[in-house]
Length: 178
Image 1 (spheres, one colour):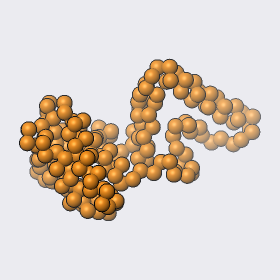
Image 2: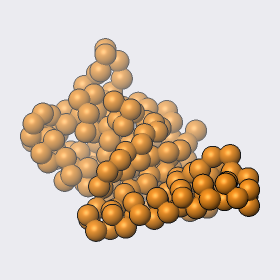
Image 3: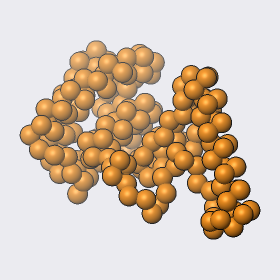
Image 4: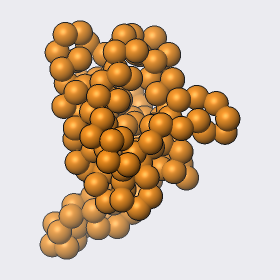
């Protein structure tokens, strides 16, 4: 269930697996030949680290895979905008039975009411066709969720429509967390 939670970290393994650490996602190669090359590079990196440790050429307290960011490294290429974070949350939460908490958007984002309304505008057709619904989850909150199974079958189209509406809001002002 960690994958579906907001701001969660997870490790994935295998062909095409994607890990998420500190809001940065790391995808493994998606083709078998690229994956084998990637595995070979990772193995060589580990072996080189072991050699350096054995020769005391460099003090190594731990080995960090090349795909995982070092905490001390500058993170210019790891910066996610608030729009990126919101998009990721929308994509994952709308694929759960609880759905997307619109009140969370309203309270966590500057202009959250406009953003929540953009989400609803993007989901308007899905709502009218019965592919999505607004509900209270656990007796509280305003949630938008897709209806099982048809809403999930059309989730990519529904989410794309939401993103189009959010782009119009984002053009006028930058998304910022409060």
